[in-house]
Image (cartoon, helix red, strand yellow):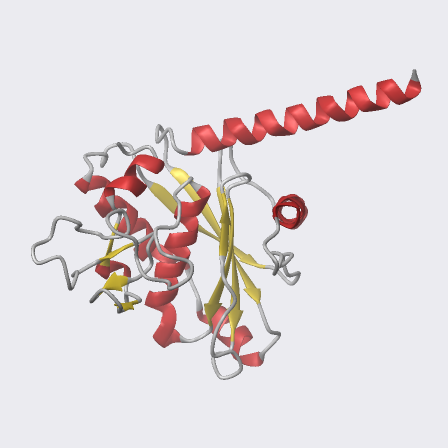
Length: 254
């Protein structure tokens, strides 16, 4: 009897958590109200360079992300309802759990739960309604030439983003942050994981361009601007990126 009661309580809790996650996920793309995006700064390698750079950052450094979303909303006729508000949540000393290296389904599920638990323990949510939490881990570019893959979770509306601690990389960092932010809203990757090349047509910002290549803009969820059938480059700024039709559908703009 006691065992059955414990199982019932556990199932009830899991159901409540699942319903809350579904409700939050749904409300985040209803676009009835401005969606708060909370940004937290973390020293990813305990370096003095990252610490010093983080000290210089203000909310203004991340405003281009909100501008990008606003301008793209205008293109899709959603200017009056689709908007985000960037909030700087401050610095966090603890580091979020790293995603599994093997990418197994069980590992990803376990990490997702750990990440959501970690985010709940290390942050406070101010205000009602769904809110996105983006955790930015900064690294000294002299020590880390290549950064590990960043991630965005739709369940929990959480992003874990690895970026460079250099003023020269601020604009390109915002491209990566915007990409992972859109993951939290349900947008999917639109590049070939084996080659990192954008997939046609959804990974092309203007798939009906004639001639097709080179493209002028990057589709934000493809992450790169196609130059030829074998070449693509990361956009230097969000001004060089667009939200494609498929991504607009995924975040409920169409």
